[in-house]
Image (cartoon, rainbow, N blue to C red; front, side, top):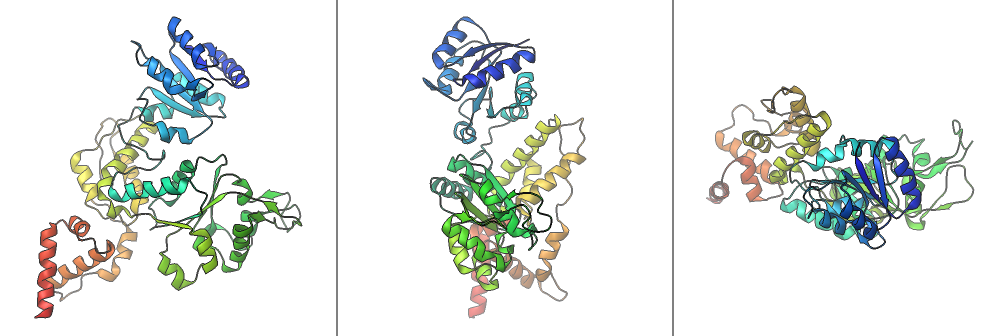
Length: 443
């Protein structure tokens, strides 16, 4: 039996929560403000404190500071109605603090009080920072991305995310939603996965009997995302004939369900995503120009993994820690293995890296803490992407070297420092090669 202190100014919540805590076999004391909580911890020791983040007379951080002066610090679970709190104060409170978001279920309380919470296990992990509670990486490219997310999060501007497949566009959408601190939910749908017949119903909803199979009213994703964020993945795969309907909603902020007579007001930020570049969008004409300018008020290009090689050890550690927490294992990376991960180009980006690590995790001996990596990571998809740059019989070493450097520079958009790192040579050597070929061409 544990001694629990529940600190929250919502009486309806404390009545329900304290009954659940007692049912689970614990003793519970209730405080409605910081002052009452101070009095409780002054005269009684608690094993666990469930603490509302915002109280009438101050922040939960004040109580945590006071607890840190005690000889035996109890475990603390912050309870909040705002998911963004986790990203704001992560790392400030130390490994003895967990987080729960209202509304709570009995299972939530049972997990944190029994010490089996996954969140608690994650809190014990290393000092990897999860920006906006979901993004990992400290490279210059990611710092620039964080700055853009922070700035656009303070506005209601529509955002278009562009980047290669697997770079984490949906995760970035989640980060923007978190940075926005809006009341409504994040609702996601994939425009490329919807049939032409059903896309209107998915986006805008329908009324009962509006078409065969419409046995009841359906609320579309625009209405579901009210006061929140709507994420439209693979936006460039939306049929052209449906795009004028989308444009109308973006301009008027009103939707008309299929089969309805009256329209409905909607208010949400739209984040769209595509793996096409702006040039490809314009040339292939998969997206109307007026739609593009409505959706891409603030375009963000997410860097591929090969442009932020320094983040690979952080990502690999974050992934293995998550797998450890889920499976109660203790696998750790060796420095040589992290170097091996950095040496590969990862054409499938973070999705491919996560897949490779998960596969290695499954193949590793569970009685050991050593991870077994495969000899190589190359996928059949990577081979298909490289067919246009294959070596052919009769080419000289010089020709092959030129082609390799040309392709690498093209991939990193002319960044010679990054190209040299990917090629495993010094920047000086790369410049010497380029200058020599230039002199040959001029001579």
